[in-house]
Length: 125
Image (cartoon, rainbow, N blue to C red; front, side, top):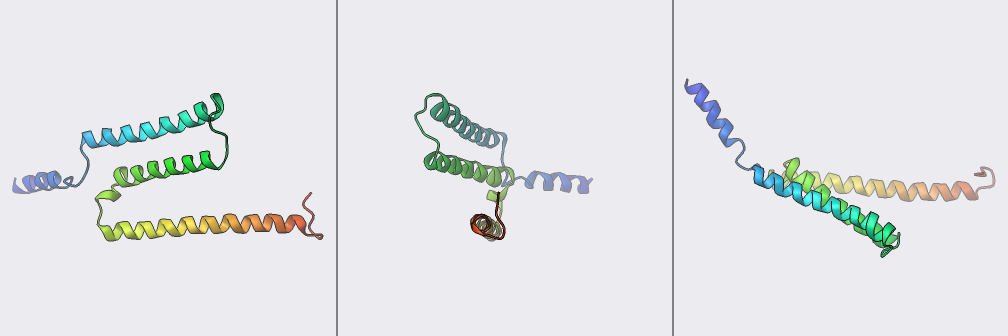
């Protein structure tokens, strides 16, 4: 009987740093609001009312909103916010390296694309 009570007590303490229903709905509301804002910008401001033109500003807004949404998903639904700071730093460094390598691949791919188009032996037509 005491083993059963120990398991129940352990189960109650396992979720101390987690989220309750109110916090889950709050995060859901933030993610829903950010998604609605993205749709409003895309469909309203850019295409329907033509207040904003497609370009660097709109892309920057989308990237910032997407990064905020990614933070909420990783921090709350993947429980990274409730981890120790050393683990958070480790995951952050890996994420920075992945972004760095993606940028390097894009730069290198752009260089190779222009280099092969200008080469006389390998015409790209």
